[in-house]
Each structure stands twice: as structure tokens, then as C-alpha cells.
Amino acid sequence: VFLPEALQSLVIELQKLPGVGEKTALRFAFNLQQRGTEALMALVKALMDVAERVRPCSRCGFFAEGELCRFCSSPERDRTILSVVETPADVLAIERAMDFKGLYHVLGGVISALRRIGPENLRVSELVNRVKNEGIKEVIIITSASAEGETTALYIKKALEGLDVKVTRPATGIPMGSSIEFLDALTLSRALRARIEL
Amino acid sequence: VFLPEALQSLVIELQKLPGVGEKTALRFAFNLQQRGTEALMALVKALMDVAERVRPCSRCGFFAEGELCRFCSSPERDRTILSVVETPADVLAIERAMDFKGLYHVLGGVISALRRIGPENLRVSELVNRVKNEGIKEVIIITSASAEGETTALYIKKALEGLDVKVTRPATGIPMGSSIEFLDALTLSRALRARIEL
Image 1 (cartoon, chains in turn red, green):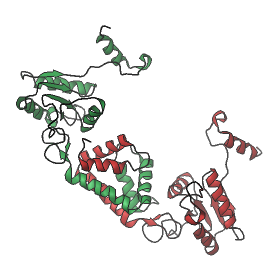
Image 2 (cartoon, rainbow over the protein chains, first blue to last red; image 1 turned 90 degrees about the vertical axis):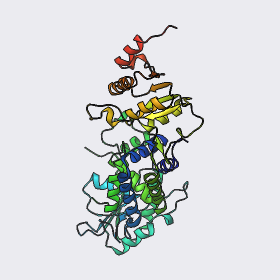
Image 3 (cartoon, rainbow over the protein chains, first blue to last red; image 1 turned 180 degrees about the horizontal axis):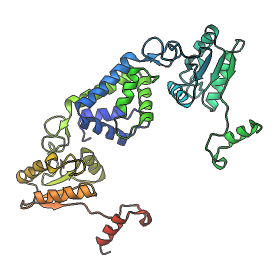
Image 4 (cartoon, one colour; image 1 turned 60 degrees about the vertical axis):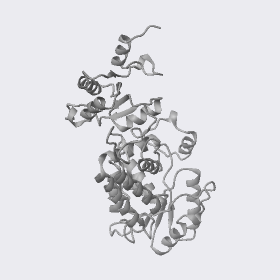
């Protein structure tokens, strides 16, 4: 109530960022104000550029500046293998984690009765069309290892039935570096059932 | 390297916020992009309003939209008592914590040999002028309980010598809710020396 209105409005906008409460928003706002007009305008410019130029890739749904994203427009990616993920952030996680050289397909979420998201709200029919037309040989469904992620994976597997494509999913099991004592029961029981010979 | 340039620039700008690393900046950027143009432009407007309208109060250095901040322009504050603080954020902390009804004076930092900040870089002479001209009876120096904060407090006490004003500083001691076991030695020894009779 003691802040100037403009600063108060900035705090309210910053609180809309994920995981940002009032205290953090105040710290951000003070920091921006104290760094001066130039710093504020640099952020303004970056935001406006994103608003004007960043769109979903018309093929895979990842971020793009033109028609296609960097993956879809790269001649170096393997066009026969496709990772299906929930969000653009998942694409970055996969790129960081491993040497995957195929293409992506971003669903835009998972099927969720609770949040009223059905397959028609996701990019599922686009996926089916890509598999039909792009000569794809394997689809890896990398949705979350949760009930909703599994449901979505099964739905996609069904939607691709009858097409000449291998549909896979990453192994579930004990994550690296974890102690058995603190592992949740579901992960442990699944890992045991999926045990492999040494 | 796989993000569109505009999004990458936004991530770089967001990483300049205090305590924000690459992962958090990515999450913020994705969230902003996915909330759409309207959300982006709401933040743009808030930033531009701050750049255009928020200035330091010409009297106390707190945030102001006009010439004076809400404290200095309020007829309800006690003009005879002044809290001297390092930053505008400290003002908010004091307002939240207690029923202080006086005015403020924001120094803009502390004296620091390391960061080459001397009294001439802070609003110290402005403080001396206020004490000379505004009928102030008590100055509470609420700088940090650190070596630099103490140095700054002592410097200000000296600068106000000879003027008809009481100069005080908050008590240091054991913070509420803390266990003796984990208290740092300096806090504990000071609290013991400053012990009071029950």
C-alpha cells in the first residue's frame, strides 16, 4: 500500500510467474527499478520480441520463429524417429540428457479428466497424420510416468494401431543414485517386476 | 541453442533477476510465452510504467511517483522521528513488522571499502540537512547488524554530532524462536554482554 501504483502493478504481474510469491516479486521489482531504465527497457524489448516472433512450429509444436522450428528445419536430424512429449520444456530436457538425433512432437499436455483435457485438445491427430505421411519408423512416447501420462501414452498407441510404425516408451525403474529405503512403493514394485538378468 | 533467438534473449534477461538461474529463467520464459501475447504485454506495460513514473523521493529516497513518496507526503506521519535504512526494501520490512509512524531516510547502501562505497555515494549529507532543517528529534539508524552496517551507523552518528537530536540503534540479541545451540558465537556473546535483569 506504500508503493507507487506503477511498482505495485509490476509486483502483481511478476507474481503470475510460476513459483513466485509476493516476497520474490517485490525483490524482482526493486531490482529492476534500481537497475534503471535501460535494464527495464531491455526486458521490455525481449518480451515484445517473443510476443511478436515466437510461434509454435507448424509441424511439431515446439517453439519456432518462422514456419518450422530448428529441429524440423534441420537437415541433420533423423526423420524416421519421433519423440512425443508433453511440453517444449521436455524437448530441452531430452536434448540435455542424451544424444537423440530424431525429431519431436509436442502434445501440449496430457489427457486429464480432472482438467477436462481430451485428445482433441492435444496435438494427437497431427501426430497420426505425421506418422501416415512422413515415413516415420518409430514413435517414442515420452509422457510423464504418472496415471495421466500413461493414459495418454496408451491412447496414442491405440490411435497409431494399424499403421506401420513401432511404438515405444522409456523404461520405468529405479532412478540412478536413489537408495532403496526411500523409494516409493510403486516405483520399486514396477522395477522388480521388470527385473533383468545380470 | 535450439530455442528461437527471441526466446533465448528473454531467458538471458530473466537470468539477471536476483536468484534466478538458467532453469528458472527458462521456466519463466516458457510460462510467459505460453500465456500468450496478452500476458506478455501486461508485463511490458507494467515495466514501462515503472521506467517512466517511478523515481526516488526527493526528500527520503524511497520510491515515489511524484516529487515526494507516500510517507513524506502523508499528513499522518510523525515528522519528528526518522528511521535511516539501507534500501527501500528495508522500509517495507519495517512497515510490516511494527507500528512505526515516523518518516524514513533511505541511504542507498552501506559504507563498504570492498565495493568502494563511501559516505559521498550514500544519502548522508541529505540526512544531515534534514536533521538540521526539519525539526527531527530522534534518528534510529536501522542498518544491517554487520561490520559494514555498524561502520555506517557509527559514521552517521559522528556526522550528526553537535546537532540537537537523539541517535539510536535497534537492540542486537538472540532472535525470537532460535535455539541457543545453533546460534552463531558473535550473536550469543553480544546478547550475553547486553543481558537485562528479569
